[in-house]
Length: 285
Image 1 (cartoon, rainbow, N blue to C red):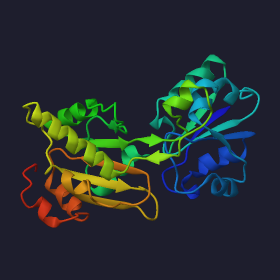
Image 2: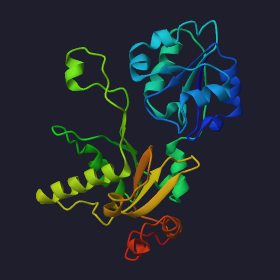
Image 3: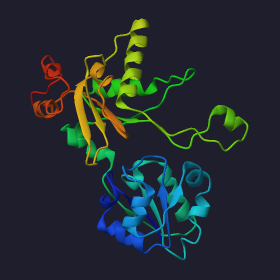
Image 4: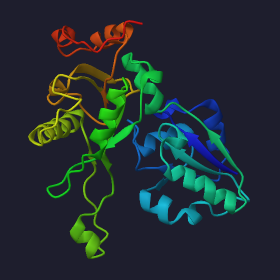
């Protein structure tokens, strides 16, 4: 049996009882280590689970999946994922590979950022398409995610922005020369994401456009959701470019039309309560 086990968002204890029971009876246990991170390290997980963990990086999961599934038809193998197992499409590919090999699988779900964002008070059914914001480089500055945020906002919907994670990435030079030398891990902050959005807004105005999102659009910054030191800040997009939320992982929400209850909840986390005084994006029903 192949078990895909969600670990939740906080620390070692966020695994479900069902998930922990599965892990403890598996011969091999892999820890997916590139789509997200917990607030504790591999050693803390091993101590709590009573099992040695094998780190599974992007290269192993995407290019060597068959080795990961080896013997899963005759013994139990677990694949641990921060959040929920299907928070990344890579894991659907793993299931499809297992099915083709005749290996049965079981999914044990857990909380993910996709539902835990409700902690800020915005109602989950008012969210539109989720987007990813990637790190810009000097020569690559994509803006396609901005169009999706605008479309959500035009429809009155909030947008959850998942911020870029760079783990075990190679520089272009090392990649071209085939050198297995990796860059230090990088995790995008709410500040960086807000700065890129502000830059796009300025670019659109220079093109004669009137962006749906402005410096005064109400946004929410979240850090380490589910952890003891979780942090939430609400305010304008401009304020999000300067707010300090500390260690990763960060997420950003660009709001759409808000119900009065949503506004009241967001005010609990406001950087400056005056940011909400003139907010016209409010439902009356």
